[in-house]
Length: 285
Image (cartoon, rainbow, N blue to C red; front, side, top):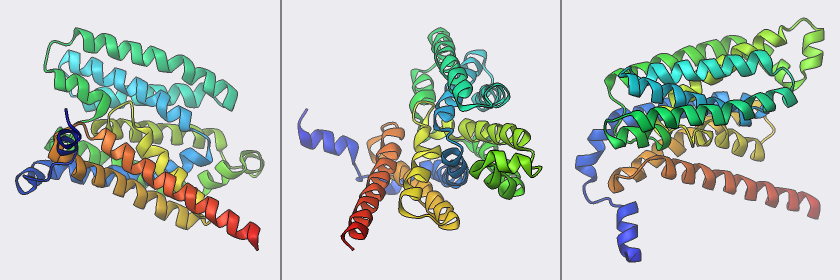
């Protein structure tokens, strides 16, 4: 296969006028997930839960795979798996060392269980592949409604606990001493994270959910120390990554996740370069 053939397969804009209407639900879902990932991701970074996102996604994948095998809505299975993992990590992993150990145990178990369920599934191969890498046109009306409900729930609860959660994330010991229910907040946030992972799996797949819930926020904090601006940039980066990735992926008909993760990574790389250049400028002065 020549370079031109590969390029045409990756970026083919010939029939965009006919293809874009087919992914309207996916674009709406992507915008919602970008908004969700941008807000949640800030606390993922602050609370050092990047590894937890990956652990939850593995059990989310297992739940979705079992649901697919059983003929149940995969969104329900994905949510069940995510919340189970979030509760286990939140309840048993109060300390970072314990939490990482629990996640390291859950990850291979969830992945193995999911692969077992997919191996037994006799339906379309695209359904199997989509759970791991996402599908562009897989978001139908019921799934979009699920995503709207999940996103609204997470964002409303996050808004209600934003101030105490920020305090507990910044200095948990001082927050606990001043009466902030840090333990309860930790479990509540883990449940919100579980719901966010379950929602994200529907578009980018279980393996690459970090590109939504970690990378945009990690990029944002590289270029600003302002909490408000960090949140704004995180949301902007996340929405741009998902929506931009979906638009790029439409023409080639390939899985959406490589496009989303590439856009997200390029944004992160750009922010790192800006940080390096800024530090050098300060050093020169």
